[in-house]
Image 1 (cartoon, helix red, strand yellow):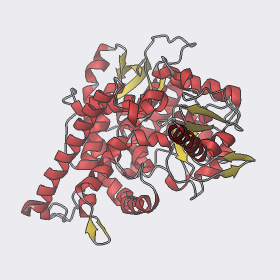
Image 2 (cartoon, rainbow, N blue to C red):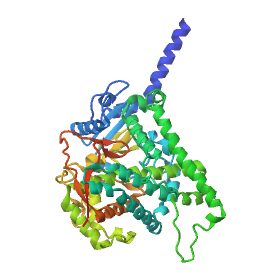
Image 3 (cartoon, one colour):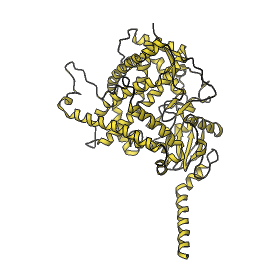
Image 4 (cartoon, rainbow, N blue to C red):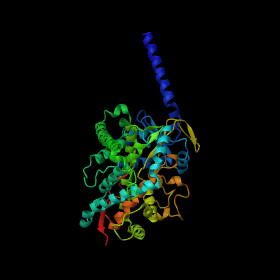
Amino acid sequence: MVVLAATLVLATVGLIWFLYQRFGNLIYYGEKLPGPPAYPLIGNGGRFLNKSTAEFLIELGNIIKEYGKCCRIWLGTDLLVLVTDAKIAETILSSPKYLDKSIEYDFVRPWLGDGLLTSTGRKWHSRRKIITPTFHFKIMEQFVETFDQQSTIFVQQLKEKAESGQAFDIYPYVTLCALDVISETAMGTKVDAQLNSDSEYVRAVKDMAHLIQQRVFNVLARSNLTFRFTRFYKMHENALKVLHGYTDSVIQSRKKELASKASKTENAEDDLGIRKKVAFLDMLLETRVDGKPLDDLEVREEVDTFMFEGHDTTTSAISFLLRVLAEHPDVQRKVYDEVRHVIGDDLSTPITLKMLNELNYLDQTIKECLRMYPSVPIFGRKFHENHEINGMIFPKGSNVVFLPYFMGNDPDYFENPEQFRPERFSVETSAEKNNPYRYVPFSAGPRNCIGQKFAVAEIKSLISKTLRHYELLPSGIAKDPTKSTFVAEMILRDEAGMLVKLRKRV
């Protein structure tokens, strides 16, 4: 009995010591940060139980409103420091010391692995160096040709909606167009999603985004130990099977093509001296790191990352912008006039990168839309040591979460933020001039979005093509102003849909 009692005492002391070493520093400094009272084991997780995905964003807004621009919440034993303070954001995002992504990115790793979005340290630096040339303007010119071709199919798919004059949700149409664009530019393969709308891949992406959101805020789903016993696990595994299966099949197919005699001349100049299009996948397959090619898993990680970041995010941005233009005819008219001036009235004129770069007012309009409706409403960093910033200790093990949705709609940063005014971003009055870290829809600093120019060019191409063919009109369906339907999953979307009407241009 004495031996058993002594063993229990030692085990208890050992457990307490382990917990102190693991969580003592985190709890001590975490509780010094402002935030709501937390409960043992679940922390503040109870505030998010039994809430819809739209209510998650509302609850975060309530916490920020009550506890300030830098506050904390506990989700289980995970400390999340919510930051909407531009000075703190600048300190962290501009520094090479804070490059590791927060714990929430662990939930996307089963899909994206250690690709550019999630990797750290030497691997991240190496991948960034490999992928940066992909967005050289010469290659971007090839991508613009794909943007234009798929945008042409997009406006053809909307013809019936314009003829009916009825309100409809344009989001699914944009989703399929974005998938066609990214499949062709990333993998060099056409999936014809716009012509075959029942896409298993699109459903899998949607399921995965929903599951990642659930894992962020659901205490049981956050832990890998308990996640497999939740109702989400089977959906998660099924989605992964589709996503990885699709990418793997394309990689193997492309490798065979590149190894064949025909593929040896695919990237060479043809008889007219015109270089043929090169997909992102082809560049990865030809890449050497320390003299060795990337293996299939490394290639898949980067292709999946490119597919994710270039699909859902642009879908969100384009859909919000189409609805905003429908609701602001004065802005739409200015954008349309600029498009006519730069591209002309011939609807068959193909768009070039030079034309897109000249659409300055459209560029301002995109920025203003992303201020109000950032495609990525939440992103984060992980701290591996204690750091003092603005007199506060951000403890080792904490996850700093930036919320560009709330920053862009903060009256302290933007006058009358509820008003849609693209002129905020004109050269003369640019809203980015004061503290540019008030506006971070593409993140900022060393880990900013590498595909920003790609995304903006794609958005400009599709918007300009749509406006050349159709006038965007408000849906006429009133929304309850007291009820928010915005969902902050991996991307921002509206549960109520992106409802618009179309009228053919005369």
